[in-house]
Image 1 (cartoon, rainbow, N blue to C red):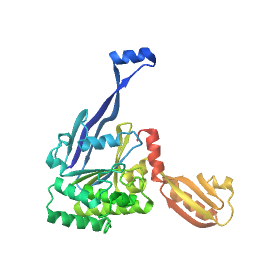
Image 2 (image 1 turned 120 degrees about the horizontal axis):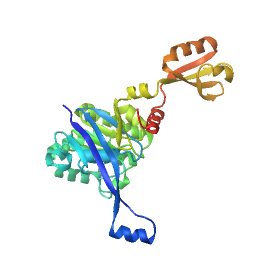
Image 3 (image 1 turned 135 degrees about the horizontal axis):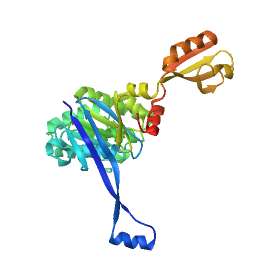
Image 4 (image 1 turned 90 degrees about the horizontal axis):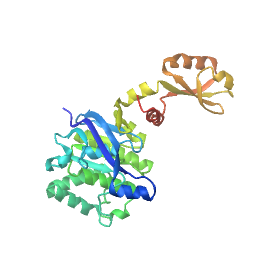
Length: 326
């Protein structure tokens, strides 16, 4: 049974339209006109318990609006949505106990107080007993490697430590469903890896369901087997990451290091040249011709090294958004 169900979910915002000049201002004051902006347009999907799903889209595509409808922060204009068996916008107590929303650009911890003080407030809000609070605190502190950090003011923490503390605060009540909006935003590479490792372990340990948005494709490839792609408010893909690569990038990148400086004219007979730096050449070769082409290269050229890789996922996603369809 699905833990997240969205059926024909839409959100429309009325935006006032004003003509320029004094006449337009007076007319706008007495007879205001509006046009509709469809932030989300009839999207449908389901997510089963324990899944980690990537939710991708360009800026303004409707990702955050969708997350806000799923968490009950805003009311959908039309359609139906249920999360953990509840209707989110009713904001029932039982529902709030089962979800959490983490936004990388927002913070809930009080800036001048130790993070531990904010965590105690969260425990009181969620009616977590002192014994259970200490147990969960110890468990999450160890998982996040925050030992010795929670007693200092939040403002004295590094950005990575603050993000970890924000995750601890958001997960203290042990929610079933995690909505994560850019949880690694602004973090350095090491901090990003630490957050990903924690989310992977948390998912495995508690079988939590995760819906993750991120502009860092490394987050998606490290954590998500399934992705949802939204473009201009419409869901244009729902499937596996591998399936997306197969359908929208039916080619492979072949990088070859040659023993001798190459003849560019001859190289063009093997495939489209993507890059060339001295004796190192990168080809884009259709997948159905990959085996035959690699065999030709190894037979006809003096090869020092050869690697075959998939195209960068960022490039594939970019092409999908440019096309707007699958």
